[in-house]
Length: 129
View (cartoon, rainbow, N blue to C red):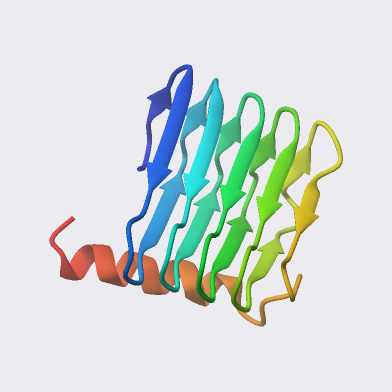
């Protein structure tokens, strides 16, 4: 999702496999829910404004969550790693209305989060999107 204005509820569900979710330059006024289910999933947000709560439920697998650029969460970020080896990284430009709640993430540092976004963009280009 890029360059969009979204309303009351934004939900992304992945279903098995190794999925990548990318949200950039978007404003979301309502609650946002990312459900990873199973597989080694990557969630990346960049320069996005979330008006209220954001929930990342990584599910089963080795999952990655990256926030880059000027991303803001109006209220609280809830991150649940579940099973697997999960990692997240938030850039210095990421702001939160309330302190994040983070559970079951084994790492809070990713060596090159920009490379993860570059990889997703390459996958999108390969798919013709």
